[in-house]
Image (cartoon, rainbow, N blue to C red; front, side, top):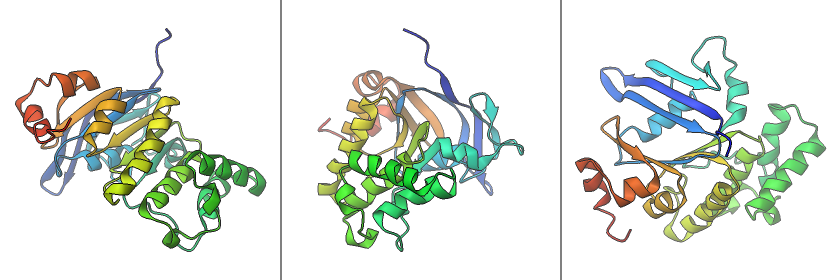
Length: 248
């Protein structure tokens, strides 16, 4: 089996807001095909870590290497980087004045300079993948939360990213809609999509992840395979956190 290509390498990452240090000396890496779930209590720094990786927040110190190049370097083309590192937000972030189809076409046309016909073909391919092609003429407000999130995933996929970041993609959804989004994400994982997922869905993290990172108080408290972290946690904070999920 050939060695997987390293996509991201995060070292000594620190992020402070004023005197409050939210991330403290974070280290981890993402290889091609990895499905990494980042778990932990609210306020542990999970979403801030994801936002630093996509440069929605500027790291205070440390480095984030994308194929060996530091993304915080002033010479780095942040827009080209974001084409390859897509983001799915908890509140969907769809354009409410555009149809479902146009939401998925706007990135390929505006950012990747694709012709309209090619962008439409791409959009339709991924809307079909998330079972939303029948809603192409709808506006986001006409859709349920689960449907909006599936469109947001299709929009991210239409940019043909190398890795997808998910920031609590089910936290804004009613319980009955969570499953439809997790099913899409499970399929992507099975197809080999590289994903970094901040989630409170513990059963999903246990069953789908190749690697799990548990964060507490701005540090990575424990990490390992899904089997290691869920089946045999070593740290007391990990044990305490997972003990709240009795049904796992």
